[in-house]
Amino acid sequence: MYTRPTEPRSIGGVLDDGLRLWRDSLAKTWPFALLAQLVVAVPLLILGFKLQGAVPLVPGVTPRPLSPANAQAILDLFKSPATWLTYLGILVLTALFYTALVLRIAAVASAAVSSLGGALSSALRLLPRLLLQFLLFLLATVVVGVATALVAAAGSRAVGLVYIILFFVLVFVFGRVFFASMVLILDDAGPAESIAISWRLTRGYWWRCAGILLVLFIIGLVFSLVVGFISAALGGALGRSSFLGTGVGQLISLLVNTVLGSLYPAVLVAILHDLKLRKQGGDLLGRVDALARQ
Image (cartoon, rainbow, N blue to C red):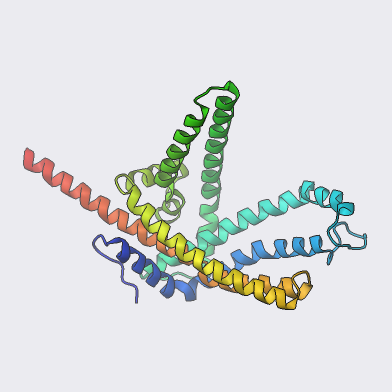
């Protein structure tokens, strides 16, 4: 049974806390994880069938397999406003269900009572701020991209060194603001405020967070490889280009990703709680030291 720690934990302890939180919250989070998976999987499944010729690329036109002859139709499909609006809707709905899922995990972590409707209502309230924060990060990415393009256009001999330095700076900054969305959701903070809080919490703990996230990434990668192998084996047995083979592969991925959908958020909640304990302890020691010097 998950019990919220009252003091900082080791890296292994934080991972154990996250895994226990994932296990104990699974019964409350799987509906939102399933909805988030369906929002992404259904359009991709339909697109896959279209590319295989099972569904017409253009309404009223007889479907045919992917070939150079219908390459223009495929290109028109991706250029269609309906396609991009669909992907925008996927982004918004995925963010909504992810936020509700995180809120349910937080409720389990704090032993609070939370209903599906209440979590979804709170997620709807937080969604505009979350999307605004996404736009802030997107704007920052565009600015960096433009600056990089200007450096490349200058034709400087040191452009390679500039790229290397820029890469490490971006990795460092990304690690410092990585928890901004979680802070926004858990602490009900504003888009810019949550970025500042993430920056403050990760100060001095960049490598620690990177180590935990690396282990988490490896765990997720192993699961993905296993699921991919099973899906490929079944798809090959049923016919990779067949409707049944594609459908079975997508179904397996859907079920596994639904179960694992709350794994990453649960571990992130555990990491964030550990960071807060460490920062609060550090702040307290700093205040005691300041008082002792007076």
